[in-house]
Image 1 (spheres, rainbow, N blue to C red):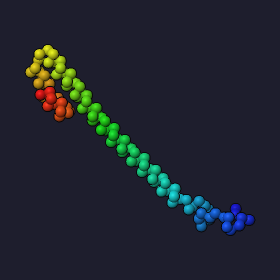
Image 2 (image 1 turned 60 degrees about the vertical axis):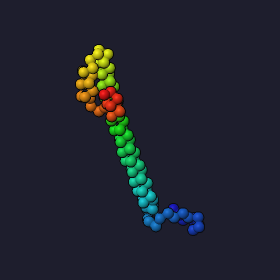
Image 3 (image 1 turned 90 degrees about the vertical axis):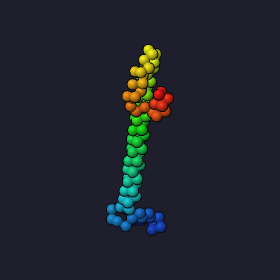
Image 4 (image 1 turned 90 degrees about the horizontal axis):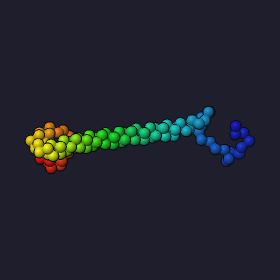
Length: 100
């Protein structure tokens, strides 16, 4: 109740009967902005995680292939090493050309 408070000391935020109606727009915009930040963060994090997963798969494939080729070369089975290299999937281009 603002009775007894001088007019120049009153703080009036809105014209409605039951405040805080003037803050609804601000609250809605703030909530919307926060939601957009969370959604953007989710998509950025998801994209990063998928990229890391793909790189991990390439590294795993490279390790397994080079291990198999090294084992064949150590046993002087060059033809079998070439077959393993030809059947390898997901190898980085640099590794595939180096091992040929």
